[in-house]
Amino acid sequence: AQRVTQPEKLLSVFKGAPVELKCNYSYSGSPELFWYVQYSRQRLQLLLRHISRESIKGFTADLNKGETSFHLKKPFAQEEDSAMYYCALSPTGGFKTIFGAGTRLFVKA
Amino acid sequence: EAGVAQSPRYKIIEKRQSVAFWCNPISGHATLYWYQQILGQGPKLLIQFQNNGVVDDSQLPKDRFSAERLKGVDSTLKIQPAKLEDSAVYLCASSSDSFSSYEQYFGPGTRLTVT
Image (cartoon, rainbow over all chains, first blue to last red; front, side):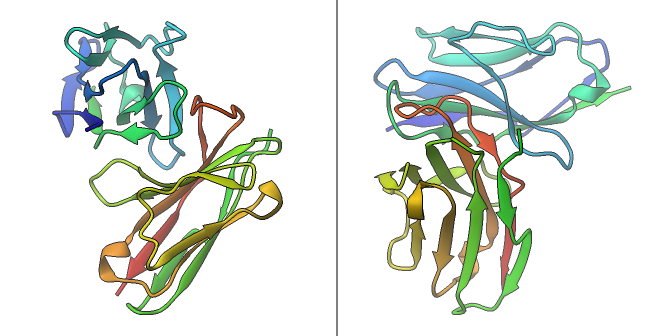
């Protein structure tokens, strides 16, 4: 069964500390993976996707097919990074996006 | 570009009543999605349209939920009759790609409370 697991519901770090939000997926093929973010009182929006290999707002995510993971990382967390982060999977060329339950990141001053 | 519009933003109804939500996607976007997000969970896809055709409704509770997208633009999602467990935020999203679900643009959502 297709599944996206985000093991941490809440992650709290100090400003300037590294941050890693974990995402593990279950899918038999080669899916497309995304990170979406929702800032306070804003809409859910795309942060990055693995096919573009971009760094957005200092965040990067590497797809590890062996470990079926797509962890989101940032070397130095900022207070404005505090938000809800969702990992999502879409079957290649498919029609269904599956979201994880989300991780709330809180960056303390 | 104007974003995805949804209305109403909030709705409170009693169980067994009916309710309808409206979504206007970004102009030119062929694909439209309805998600249900229960508190503490990620969005769950209910139905996906490509233009005015349904491409996935496997998780739509068809005994009480229905959706349509007339003329391939606006869409409505209806619940009839509502149950307590339907309390959630209903999100509409759209994307410009026809055969994949790349970047989706989300609306503000409609928060439904069923009492």
